[in-house]
Amino acid sequence: MTKAALITGITGQDGAYLAKYLLEKGYRVYGLMPRRSSSMLWRLQYLNIENDVEIIEGDITDLASLIRAIKKSNPNEVYNLAAQSFVATSWEQPILTAQVTGLGVVNLLEAIRLTDSSIHFYQASTSEMFGLIQEAKQSEKTPFYPRSPYAAAKLYGHWITVNYRESFKMYTCSGILFNHESPIRGIEFVTRKVTDAVARIKLGLQKELRLGNIDAKRDWGFAGDYVEAMWLMLQQETPDDYVIATGRTTTVRDMCDIAFKHVGLFYEDHVVIDPKFYRPAEVDILLGNPNKAKEKLGWEAKTSLEELICMMVDADMDRVQKEMKVLNLG
Ligand code: NAP
Ligand code: F7E
Image (cartoon, rainbow, N blue to C red):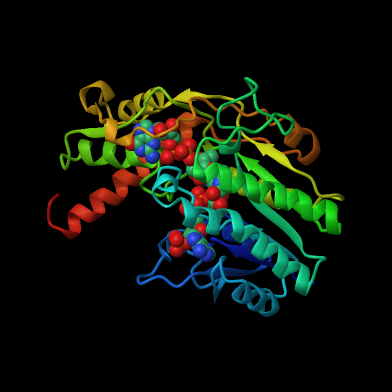
C-alpha cells in the first residue's frame, strides 16, 4: 500500500528536498504550511514538485491545526522540520523561537499521541545543541552545551522526543544534523550569503561582502544527501538518535576561498569584516562523528564541500544572470 508522509516545514530547504525524495519513493506527501502574506512555494517550484504535494494549512504552535492535519493526511510518518531556524534571529525573537522551535515539538507529539501513536516521528535536531563543545568530535554520546536561544529550544525538542519514546513507547527519532546547505538554502545563512555575493560581484552588481566571524568552523554537507538519513531513521526496527555529518570541518574563511576562486576571484579583495554580524555567543567549531549512522543506517555523506560550494555558486550565477536579463542589465 502507498505510504503517506506529513512534513512540517515543507516550504523550507530540507522540507523541499525531503518531499522530492519521498515522492520519488512513491509516497503520498502532505505538507503543513502556516499562512504567510506572500507565497513561500518557490523551493517546491525550483524542484518542480509544487503540484505533486498536498498542502495543508496549519501552524506548529496551533495544536488543533496539527490534529486536523494528521487526521486529513493519515500519515505513516511525520517529519518535524518546522522551526525558526536562523540562530542570529533567536536572540532578537527568543520567545517566538521557544514557542515554534521548542514547544512546537511537543504540540506535534501530542497531536500524534491523541490520534495515532503508531506513527513514526522524526525530529530535526541540530549540532547547535553541542554549542561550546565538550569533545573534539561530537557524537550521540557527547554532552550538550547550547549557546543560543535557538539551541536551547532545540535541546527541549530533542529531549521531549527521547522522552515520548521512553514514556509512551512511541517510534520517535532525533536526527542531530550538522550544517547542510544547497542552492535553495535561505540567503541569510553564511554559505548562501557568500555564493550569492560571489555571483553578484562576478557579474558587476556588487563590490564587497560584509561578514562577521570568518574564523568559525563548521561541518558542512549537502541537504540533498541529508534527507535520505531522515528517511532511513524511520525505517529501522527500533527508533534511535543519530548524528548526521561529514566528519570534516572548515572555516568560513576557507569556504569563502573556495567560492571566490571558483569564478577566478580572491575573497581577500572583497570580504569586509563587519562586527554587526558577530553573535552574542558564538559556536566556534563543530565537527561531527557520523560513525553510528554509517554502521546502523549505512548512510554516508556523498558530496564534498568543494562540490557543494561550486554547485551553489553556479546556481547563483545562473539565477543572477537571468534576473539581469529580465531587468535588461546584462
Ligand atoms: P528553513 O529553511 O528555515 O525551514 C523552516 C521551515 O519551518 C519553513 O518551511 C518555515 O515556513 C517553517 N515554519 C516556521 N515557523 C513555522 C510555524 N510556526 N509553523 C509551521 N511551520 C513553520 O530550515 P531548514 O534549513 O530547511 O531546516 C529544517 C529543520 O532542520 C529546521 O527545524 C532546522 O532548525 C533544522 N536543522 C537545520 C540544519 C541545517 O543546516 N539546514 C541543521 C540542523 C537542524 P516559512 O518559511 O513560511 O516561515
Ligand atoms: O552561520 C558565521 C556565524 O548562519 C555559520 C542553521 O541551519 O546550522 C545553521 O546555523 C557560521 C556562524 O549557520 C556571517 O557566526 C560569519 O559561526 O550559516 P550560519 P549556523 O548558525 O551554524 C545549524 C546546524 C542549525 O541548526 C541552524 O538552524 O558563520 N558567520 N559571518 C556568519 N553567519 C551568517 N549567517 N552571516 C554572516 O554574515
